[in-house]
Amino acid sequence: MIPRSMALISVLLCAAGVVGAQLPRPLIREDYDPGKTLTRMRFTPLFDQVPPSGYLPVRIFIHNGFRTMRKWDFDFVSTCQDYSDRGNELRSGHSVTCDPGQTLEYDILVPLVTAFQSYHGNAASLEVRAGATALRSSLANHATEFDPRWPSVMISESLYTANRGPLSSAVNSRLASPARGHHRYHYGGGATNLEFGAAFNPGHLPEDWRGYTGFDCCLMTGRDWNSLAPGARNALLKWNRLGGNLLIYTRSPAADTATLNLNPSGRGETELIRSWGEVRILDLPATGLLDPASTVRLIADDLPPRTGGNKSSSYHHDFHAGWPLRDAFGSRQAHILFFILVLIAFGILVGPVNLFVFARSGQRHRLFITTPVISLGASLLLVVLILFQDGFGGRGERLVLMEVRSDPRENAAYLAQEQIARTGVLLSTRFKTSEPATLSPVLIEESHWARVTRENSGGDGRFTLDLRNEGFAAGGDWFQSRSEHGHYLETVRPTRGRIEALPGAATPVVTSTFEFPLDTLYLKDARGNYWTARNVRQGRRVTLAGVPSTRFHSWLAAEKKRFNARNKKRLSLAAQRSACFFAATSEAPAIDTLRSVNWTRTHAVLTGEITTP
Image (cartoon, rainbow, N blue to C red; front, side, top):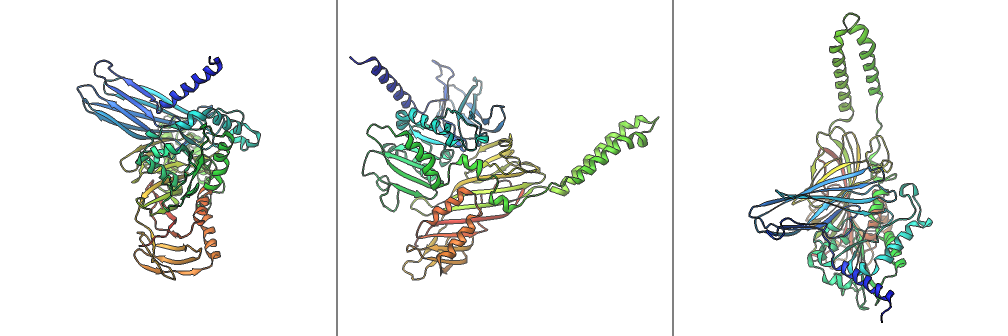
């Protein structure tokens, strides 16, 4: 006879298995006319947690059993609020029309606000309101507690079901430890209630790389990896190149990056740096249970130093005091003396002068005319002073780090863009991008002009962002009049650009296929020798000149000083490769945002592998 305690454990394990098998679970489940038209709608997040930035991929299922066309509207409000109910908010929407008798099932991305609240107990949440023509509306909320000290993790349901409790306990113990209690002013402290990561079903992963950008690390088994649809696998590999860390657990001792088709070179390795991210092949115990302490230590301590840390921590710290781009951009003093003089003059005119000169005793009725005229004149003068001092539009600078890949069936450029802008008077703050991208404000150093800072926990901003077929349309507080804003953007851009070297030449002869000129080009050959050229133009053969390694490293150090900490690390990773190139240019196309800002300087550093024609 089975002991009662063992029976209870078996029941709990079976229940956990059932829960895992139900992933993904609908957030909204509506049956509008059961038993008659069978009209129904399902709104299902593909991850069971809301990441603190990026996008949340969701699946929409609709069956319209009515005899008339129906339109479903979805309104999303992504928030991150603290105990005082303050915080940033991002609104977006989606609409779809369903014909009579039609069934639709497809995936969309919901933009998420970057979580800047960093006190204990904050949650990134998504409110969803869904409604259709002449049908009832639905409202649901999806919230997840977060902590900037812990990376955002996604984990496959097979690993999640077996390891959820111990892994979550290990995370909370780590964050509650006094040894980990640094930055207590910003992070609070004490016990937390974080989940280890967001669970997913490998058969339902998104096929758009942007769907993973809110996460820093992905854990799955080798069986999960082999079961991925080609589109989902390609999207996950793009995310990996953009800095995501991919951990694959397998029981096969022969498994490596070659057997899992992760290394185009065919070399079998258990650790592999792919552009800005890392892949590791790890042993999965026969029990399926991971060691909680070592797993948490791997994700929090071992991976971040190699790939530049997690995004949430970067948004909180990398752009604050000491951000090189902002330091190079310079500060601006607020000239308030003229405004003070105007206000003093206004006070004198509207008070004693108005009372004793313009509307003296016996003529007090003139106050109804003179007071509005004086107020209007002072307002116009203030407007003129503002326009004279700040002007229209604004000025900004951008830094672009571009990793170029010419691997078979890839031909893509991976862009990380930092930008800073100081605006004058803006007639419109709406803008569009012409390519898919991620966009986030960053916490910059406190100043008279700064609107998103650590001190104000992100500025209580109100943003809008709606995805289009190509890119997105944004509005709200991404840019504000007479303000200073910093942003971080990423994209994956198709390209045929590359540096080709003629084979067999004793002195390298290269050709650039980039559509823009390269001001400086360095090449590191397979033997570790360095070569350089200047003003390299598209389609022209250039013979390189040999240089000592110290010259290259001096140039690279100067370029690294331009970037934030995360992109510095990415340049260091690129410098470890052989048969690669480095280039700098001021004419590479950046990710465009607000066009009324005069982007006076766009400096780009390109890295990639040398190819042969």
